[in-house]
Picture 1 (tube, rainbow, N blue to C red):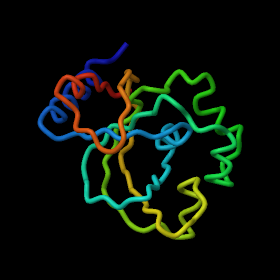
Picture 2: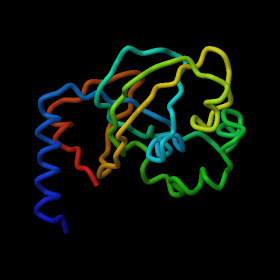
Picture 3: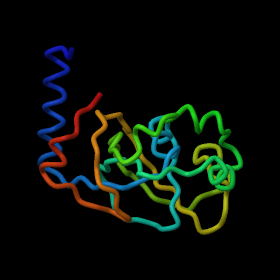
Picture 4: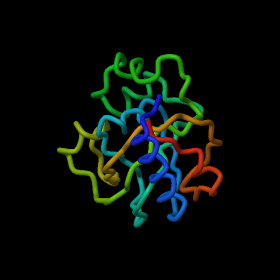
Length: 156
């Protein structure tokens, strides 16, 4: 049960969200959950987008083999630990602030769980917080949330 101060804080966040643009972006697991432990996101494209981003887990996760090919660093046991039964696939799971985008450097490997390769971009997030998961239809690229979708965001 939430305390009164938690309820006020949660309502305050909803009120703030209702007045700003919130974008959604999809990650394949296990990388969606890894955002909650400070992962630096990598993409093949640069972005000028800044602000609130809803972190959504796509319906289909990467296989252990695909994760090994991408990362060479992330062990299968971590893959299983983040979402062993797949229950979060197809759900919004977190919200964070996208604050920067820069070219990936070799030394970023340990924070991205991705092997360095030229042409990758680091999307830097701060203040990533878990939310009460809710189903959301997947998409490629950025999607701007509707007021109804923003109202579904409840911080945990």
